[in-house]
Structure formats: C-alpha cells, structure tokens
Image 1: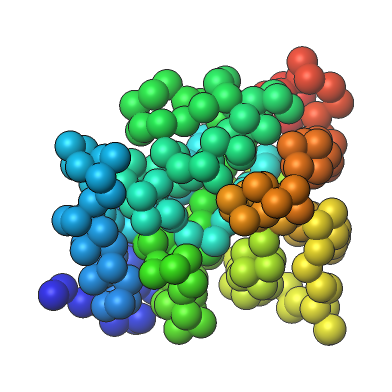
Image 2 (image 1 turned 120 degrees about the vertical axis):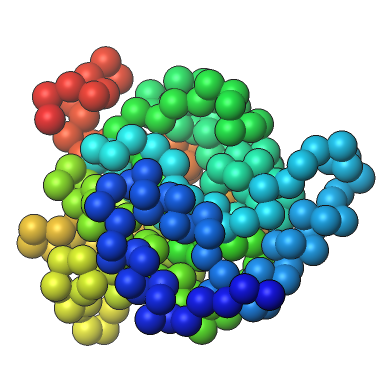
Length: 254
C-alpha cells in the first residue's frame, strides 16, 4: 500500500499554486492507512444498488468556484456518496438535502446532484470537507483529521481573497475551523473557543465569519432535528454576511 508522511502532505499542499493543482494532489493522497483501506474496500465491494458503477475510491476534493464568498465545511465524504461519485455530497441523502437548499436560496443552479457530470454549478459557494476520505461509520480519528488538515488549510488560503463566511456543518467541522483560522490567517482562536450550535455565529476582525449548522445527515434530517427551513435560514444568513442584498444579486457587486 502506498503511504505518505505528514511532512509530505504538508509539502504537497503548500506547493499547490491553484485549486486545480490542489484538487489533483488531494485525490492522490495516501496518508492515512485506515482510510485508504476502507475507501478502497468500499469501492471494490460496492453497494448492491450501485454494483454496475465504477466507484471513485479516492480522496474527494472540494467543489465550487475559486472566487467563492461562501464556504461550506463538512465532515467527510460518504462511503457510497462522494467516495462513489468523486464529488463532495454528490449521490447521497445528505447531498440531496444540501443541494436542494442551496438551490432554494439561489446558490446552486439545480436542486439535485447525482454525478460529477450532471451539470451542477454553485454560485459564489465552495464546498469542502474536514477529512477528504470516507471514514468507517463516518467517524475519522483525531489523527486522521490532523493528517488531512493541510489540504483544508491550503484550500482556504487559495480562496482567501474572496471568502467572507464559512458554514460549519456539525461540531466536527466547527472544531476543524479553529486550526484553519490560525494556519491561514495567523489568528489565534478565542479562549474558550465558542461552542458549536445550530445558528451559532462567531466573527473576528479581518477573517471570515463562522456560522454553525446541524449536519445534513439522515440522522438529523429524518428526525426533524434539522428541517429545510432551519437550513434555509442558515444559508440565507451566510448570503447576507457575504454581501448578497437579494436573490437577484448573486455573483454581482463584489
């Protein structure tokens, strides 16, 4: 099995001059043996409903324009979602909820996403994950989170000129933002760190605002812990922080 050291990951991430180069490097990462073994096992065995499809089976890069004003930070790709399709949140129930909401608030051109070539386009929004490989039972370890962090840090650094707000989907993503704040902006997190909560807001000087949102997992959406209106409210708040005055101005008046 191929491996990479933490130093190699940091070097590869830091060397990426643009998002396309970074995305390619992310997709070729082998830093975490447990995650590599799991993503490849899932891609080989497949779910019965997708047995005729070729799985991506690699780390999943971010998705969205390089001049995004809004960032959406998730946990990790789903085993039969992003790990299958090669695009974050694409092809799973969580993505169905997220992309429908993005479409409702004017940040996506269509309400569904089923494959990398389905025509989906995001407006002023980029989606990325704290951990880029699908983890067993959707639970990456702290060591895996830290090993993957350089990819997140470099992605945020590359969109830093336009990034105005980050929506953290869940407590894991909320916690992953604070090291990113230090690595990219040189800002130490407040002490104590603000607690995650749905609708939580943190603002700092000269850095993107941070908004908390319950994760769009089936556990949250099927039980009603996160409703469509609750998700719409957070995304609408993100639009306002990013400087969108109304539904018709997305992409204008930077």
